Image (cartoon, rainbow, N blue to C red):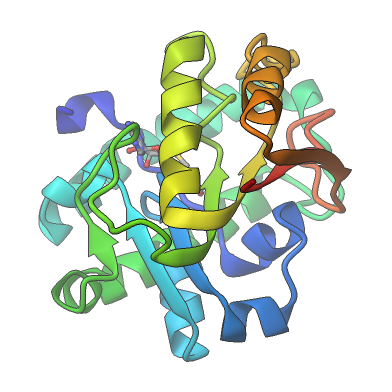
Length: 226
Ligand SMILES: C[S@@+](CC[C@H](N)C(=O)[O-])C[C@H]1O[C@@H](n2cnc3c(N)ncnc32)[C@H](O)[C@@H]1O
């Protein structure tokens, strides 16, 4: 994937915990895989806590300097887009645009400060769904924040099925947030993906979460392996 096609934008550990209904005990005891974590500070902050997390993203093909430059290029555009669509968001936990920019930039700076060490330690791996370079059952939990379902217009049903099957190959449980697309509509792939997973004997559950920033995006899909 070319860097000019990636819009690096990252959330914090607090947001991940709310989106995925994670406890600090989960963070300390589970081996976690983050798929498409980009420049989020989730990995960095879990590592500070001595938890175990590996993140994969095609963004990690690039150097710290290149990612930093790309963040500089796109941050203003992303904020302008949110400003133009302010009524698509719930301004509660994040009260306004200024706070949004501050929270996101802070998370991405934390990521950048940790990126080179984390790459050396194997915590940031350049890989892309639907293929994961890990042995079967390597993780307790695999997460997708703001990647699967959100980009349903760009990635078809087959990609979603293959990607989730692959996450379930390497982890016992998968959690995906949100279930809406970029245009705030329920992803057209959800029902077929759920039927596909249930046909393999997986247990699926749509769980309401305490996190809602994109209006209506307050549910995650939780899948456990057969
Ligand atoms: C909107 S960002 C979400 C970042 C982070 N998960 C968060 O919630 O803050 C989507 C991420 O998906 C990554 N991505 C794109 N194609 C991917 C693929 N095939 N497999 C895994 N990640 C991918 C992008 O590079 C980007 O970092």
